[in-house]
Image (tube, rainbow, N blue to C red; front, side, top):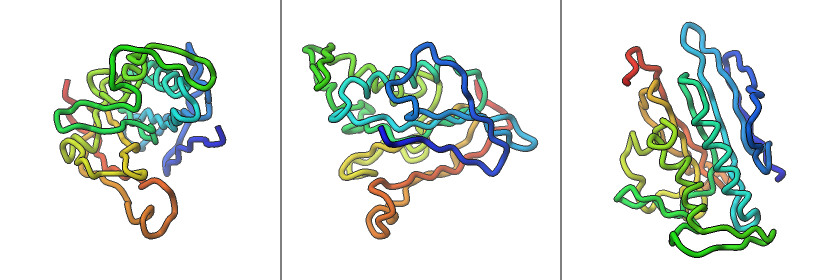
Length: 205
């Protein structure tokens, strides 16, 4: 891939080069750093650019698996995850996540590289990150703040691929998307996401 991830901060930032038991197909697609906030606890920041499935096949799901494992292994510090996940196809009002190849729990799919696996693995890989708290303890900031994403919310073409997840150490004050950057200013083909957070004085269990 030609894309790389960037984490920037006004406070001291230390890249996290912790070794992964399993490397992502494109290591540059995942970033992690510790941000030292003066007078506060350090913050563990993750960012991701999950490759699309049409061009990368099961490598997309392998990236989800690596990211999910790293989130589960992380220490109980304040944590933030942001990124372009190229999923899901749809968030339903019921809370169900509809993935691009997870319509069925049966059958198999072979990608253009000849990698063939059960389709259920696609859904499981996506949900290992996007189902949030039940998988790795992080909550979807937008859904916590505004409820289930409306069907017409899109951050790329007709899909909502860009998300922020936060640990229980944060209160989500507000969040949203700069859609005019995409539609009017044409600065990107995605709508950038912003999230306003506050570290909690009393952290819920």
